[in-house]
Length: 184
Image (cartoon, rainbow, N blue to C red; front, side, top):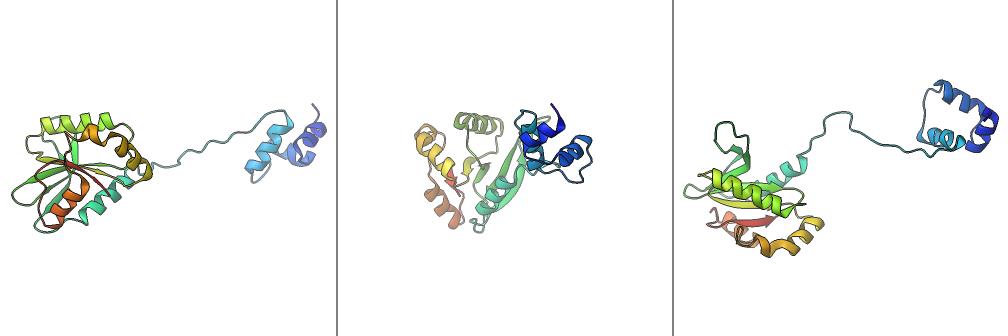
């Protein structure tokens, strides 16, 4: 196909198409690429990739900060609490204590596999004798609320308390005496 015919098909000038082919354009836009692709019977597609390592746990850190803001003395919090088993890299996202009781915190910014979360928490609880009760902390998003509405009763035996009961205890400066789920 001639350059003149390709430029007509693509809706770009022949000289601009030539510069694009030679890599002589200072700046190439997505529109340039789409027109050049159309000129030769192709459809352009663009994929985006991060150019640096993204912070993947930013939402979870924000969730933990919202939780920490609800704690009242004498409750103290520690973040990233290892299970303490040599060679085991698992950790709780946080642990709180009021001096008498302890709760381990597992934060989920996005629920997508409720069974996997349940198993992970059960295994950590089994393997960490100082875990205490477990508070499953979940971001209050439309998707997470929908998932919990569908699966809350399946999690009831493992996490019997609902968020309101847990937050009442925390506002009173006490660690809840049973595990539960809090949406924040």
